[in-house]
Image (cartoon, rainbow, N blue to C red):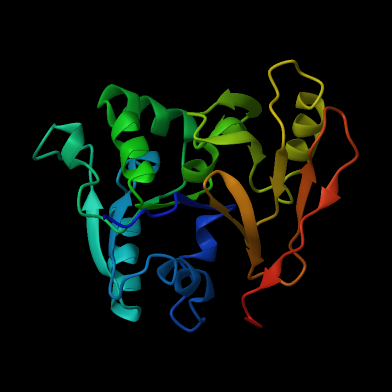
Length: 239
């Protein structure tokens, strides 16, 4: 009988937690690489939210030099095969980088890649999203894809609820999220992640919260207009 693997998703508030300078320990990356039950996993990078920025792709390969994983790049700007079934095939981990949430979703929909991503997730591929890559996975998110405005945006709904990444980065994010809580479109639970925080979901349920920033927090609102609580976070420095 084939082994049934749990569905796993890790939401990072910021990609800087992963792409740390060479003199800093790779705590967040090490945590992610421990998730699949295999050594030297294949990690497929999706940089569409940044327009496949060459500097970021180079940084991704540099991470592979520092850790035990096999890097691959999934580029929607240089596709060799337009069959969605092949987009994530063979990957142990799919990492979706940050950037513009709105543009990321538009590109994925144009190439029919959302169904392929959902299929990979349900088959046991670990999906990791940072910033925009995390935001798009929920029912709703708060995004600044237009830099002068922060607004709610509908995600693909793979993970129930609403997410606001970079919650501590700008006062406007906190204000807009507070306003959205009373909007009929809002879906609960609502997660508000400071930078340096990651949430680990298994079978669409939050199982663990981790952080690399000592003072980072993640607020949780479980009921409509409820009082927020704070998720207990494990420091990866101490793990």
